[in-house]
Length: 124
Image (tube, rainbow, N blue to C red; front, side, top):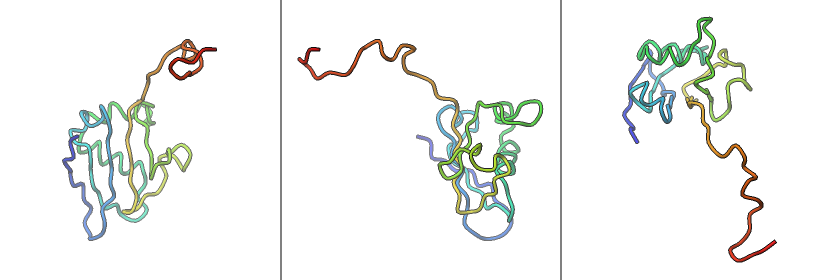
């Protein structure tokens, strides 16, 4: 896994927030991990805007024409989806971790087609 780090820093000392990109978003952003020391009152939108400033192609995946999330990128703060927090207005600090995931799909359209799980040699 690519663990290279881009430092997106703000003037001033302090811890750095971790921003982690997974799966295909690593390819779009060019890195899997970013660090940033956010100013007081920074929001998730501020962090995402900083990433887009560093990697403009990410903006095409992230924002629709109205400046709203497209749904292609799922955004989590400390493991919680932002839609269950304060959305893009969720405030963040240097102690937070923001995770960015692309949509995930898989499985079978008919998951029950294989029937109930049985041990080898067991019959109904």
